[in-house]
Amino acid sequence: MRQILTALVLLFLCISTCRATPPNPKPLQIYFIDVEGGQATLVVSPSGESLLIDTGWPDNEGRDADRIVAAAHQAGIKKIDYVLITHFHRDHVGGVPQLVGGIKIGTFVDHGPNLEDSEVTRTDYAAYEKAVAGHPRMTVKPGWGLPIKGIQVRVLTAAGEPIDTPLPGAGRANSYCTSEPSAPVDDTENARSVGVLITYGRFRFLDLGDLTKQKERAVACPNNLIGSVDLFLVTHHGADLSNSKALVWARQPQVAVIDNGPRKGSSPAAWQIVHDAPGLEDLWQLHYAEESDKLHNVDADHIANVKEHCEGAFLKVSAESDGSYTLTNSRTGVTKSYSSREQDHPTQQ
Image (cartoon, rainbow, N blue to C red; front, side, top):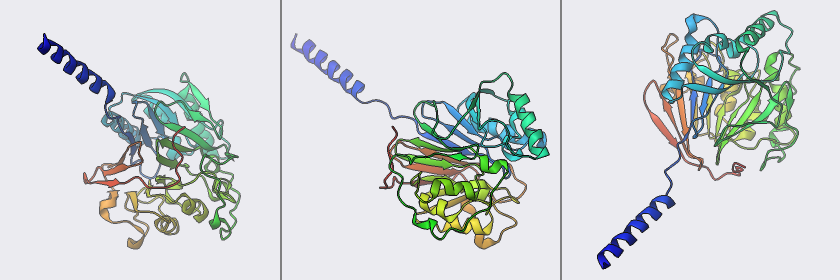
């Protein structure tokens, strides 16, 4: 009898211990997909829900849509729950008509109707509206969020308007604003970009689409409304129409990624501002910038595609809720790890 009781006690303790130790949660995954100088960033939450930010270019025999679908399959998903279009320029929205034929999509998210007086943009917006007919569509405003389980997706800018109150832990005076020159008014869709902050525990990732300098200033000056971030997608593919020092340096990014093409984006001036940002440990590029110089390109290990004509290698981030993460270059297979920083990051609410 004593042996039976002992066995039962051990079984009970084993069951209790197993229940008290939940399995490790899956990481947040971010794929920076090469669409040759446009944007296509796939985010997969630990719960398996997904968000695609922009869809690359049209045509090219479905090249960009195919690369997005391939990344989705690698991430283990068969459906994209949300497709967020930052703005209606061809290198961001152009891939939608081809993408809807390649994978199941849930809800489309954007800032509302096209706001640029341009024939090509009106044409691309009309193609977008036709392609998304029959899908749920959400128009977002600054301060809104997307209901993706396990992460927080907060809209910071949309349709030319910024958030009007600081995020938790942010709001300090930005000392870089005093030396920042004024920027011209931008009437294009770039200035209307939907910008988002994605948070997973202590990990923070910022993507502002193609937001240009005047609108960057609205979230950076005179007070820093966003705070610091771990991972920064360099705005506007690294163009110098964006990436003011007041915005970039106040973010204090640990790692920055430029989604440039071989002959688009990654201007030397913007590259240098990002490269010199306080606290930056690493800068990565999707392409070697052919029209820049060697001094304004990172080393080959930090570039996904070193040749102009390539197969479209991607950069992948896997982030943990404690703020640590890894970045993998799919061309080389090399992975680099980054430790959580002791910064004033607000935890996910």
